[in-house]
Amino acid sequence: MVSPARPSPPNDGEAAAGTVTTFDGFARFAHAAPPTPPQPGQAPRSAEERLAYHSQFVTVRTPAIESLARQVRTLMILGRHQQATARPSLIVTGPATTGKTTALLQVGRTCHLAHTRRAHPGDTSVPVAYVLVPPGATAKTLAAEFARYLGIPVASRMTTAQITTAVCHTYTTAGVTLVLIDEIHRLNPRSSSGAEAADWLKDLTERIGATFVYAGIDVTASAVFSGIRGAQLAGRASLIDCGALPARAGHREPFRELIVALEAALDLTAHRTGSLPRLAPYLHERTAGRIGSLSRLIRQAAIEAILDGTERITKTLLDTIALDHLAEEHYRPRTPARRTRPRPRR
Image (cartoon, rainbow, N blue to C red; front, top):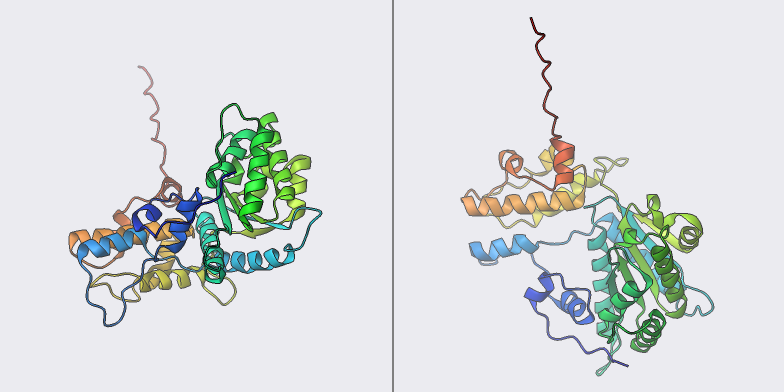
């Protein structure tokens, strides 16, 4: 059986490329130094350095990330000595571009780094696994994704049972304690192959001593929660809603708070602090409160401001930027061309 290799030294280029679905790639992502905002007294960075910085940008600790981190920590302790049945799990759900994958990866990174700090020299254990559910997942293709993460050889002639045995043995030997499964909405238990994949995943949770966290688009409204298999998943998993941020929540203004945090991280020479929070109503309408859309809008505007030399973000600039189709349809819905009535013949 293959033993997982120790991660190579951090490589910013590979980490930025998003190759986190292998152990070595995830370790590089976890150990790579996160982008840092400009610091007081720091020498000004070049335009190229600032363009690269806004391309990566900072990750703001959103309520969803805080809630997920807290609950993952608790559930890992809760299930640490549980033997007979699967441990309690978590599902991160919400619309597209609301920060689900970001929350998943940040919690995985925290867990990985915490383990690394405690590990003794020569420790080859693997604390975190991150797996994407492939489109049209079957039990065998899903098992192959789990195998790929730890570099377990899979031959085309191998049966699902053989791959599963290898996965369970290697994951247990490697000491995996947290399994992150993204794009869970791709699983369709209503089809025969999807039902097989769902059953396989349930079996895996009972054979690997780890806490499982799933993330997907509107999971509660998808086929994943339907039928007997969906009831089994819902009965074991707590839900974290990673929805769009409201403009107001009681006395707080969560969306404005997020804008303040993002503005504070900008590295522009002429930007006026406070100008973006004043645009909070416009930005909320423009992005529908979705974190991913807001982050992209601000990052893209910052890059434009550096390239055109203005070095500041204004509403005029923001309004010239085309966002993802979902956000654009919300803010600037296309109206169908008006049909003209044919003139009556004389």
